[in-house]
Image (cartoon, rainbow, N blue to C red):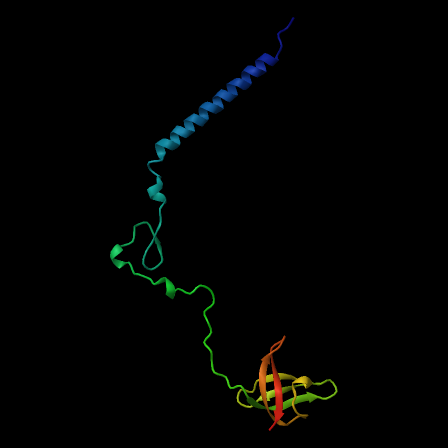
Length: 148
């Protein structure tokens, strides 16, 4: 009776496993021996006083103290610009049937939307008016519109 071939295949597989294990151990030893060349010190990067990366540590004499309270995170605050509450302008367009129109401010030539609900008096195109501004859904709206 012939010998089973399973034993030969098992022996070959065992040899392959041993060879892989030895190769792994050998690679590990090679990495250890080469680690002195590319150690942790070679991986460190420094930032100099100008914010550039370098491989040399920064000079401590050039170090500046920064007050943490002066650092602004996010959008800087807008300074309040004093805007007159009551503005003057001229009715550029007004549609009585639809109940809206536009006012052109005299100084800046900006146009502002006006709705019939924002009128204190009845107006028509070409009338000079005083008005105040309010933020609406699509921009600034003229409210409390009064003829001059």
